[in-house]
Image (tube, rainbow, N blue to C red; front, side, top):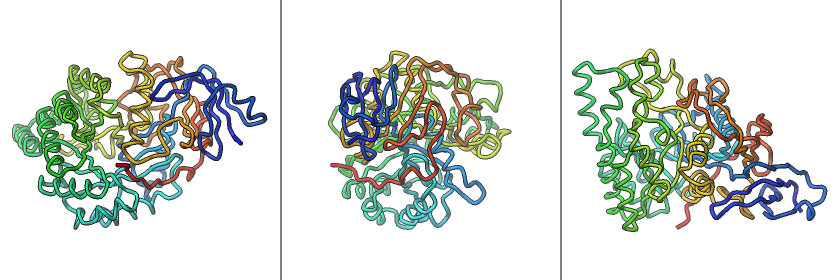
Length: 463
């Protein structure tokens, strides 16, 4: 027996789309078909006529801030922002900038326990942890098997920053993850190149915001991507490249995929829609909003990334959401560029931006969008019940109006950052209603969910 019917919408899956009804029972999809109301009389019904019925987006790359005594609302509020944007599951990292304690930073297992303790009962949508492996931790490689067994099969390592892993430690991490059913995510930039360019710029007094991008060239990213893939081959392990930003790095991934190697890569909405022209703005406050790593790239890089999404060189799109505030984390007025927090908010605008630029803009079809934002992220990151409108999966549903028009404005968003890189962007399409396991979270553009309705998910990656 069903307890909810979503009727008359265009149900979108990777394999195709059709006007159909969706029956929900006990939080899961019970049936997809035509005229289901005749089979389930008296069941609560939501009319989705004229709308797309999409699976909830799965954002596998966020730096959502943990709740603290000083700012107890941040995790909850960003989970609400995710819901407003059509994301019903997100993965959060616990790197130091997210508010994890020194003790939690020193140990993968301690960090996992702290993350779970501090987020219990906090979220409006489902979420999970992706751990961060640091060169400053006591014994991260030794802890990986237990971490994976505890339902955290993905972890991120950095090739840059003070807490980066050496190549030797990165190889050891890849081996451990591969042997125990995990997937290592790698931030690929060449630290030797970048550190030298930064030092040169500072010595010359070139410390304005725009020099952040000038000291992180595409060849630093592509070389590190090549090296991460080589280390993964040596480890006989899969590898996942985060926030890939340029054609040169994409070429490394595409070449590996052509050889059948288990190499996966994501890009982000900002690389698909914005370019390094942003760094030419005369106002430093405008430039600082786009200080991210890797930085925004050229128009030709942007076009190459869309080609990669169409051709399969790129597997999915995730936000790299960082809810920075200009006067707080960004420290505006701008300090010297090496001191600027890297990142920008995006958890609420993922679906809107990709639908507008990708589907309405003719870059990809709506079925491919569902694959990139829901189905493949769920599959790669061990979320078997998420990512598709199929019988037995969680009834995480988004009712999306493709004919709506709106302008993205920070004043109308809900995330805990105080700016959006998409300020003033006109987009086609809008989220109308969102359901998490069949329960409404957003109804007709208003939040109707509750704190704590989201679950912290344990995951396992299928071979």
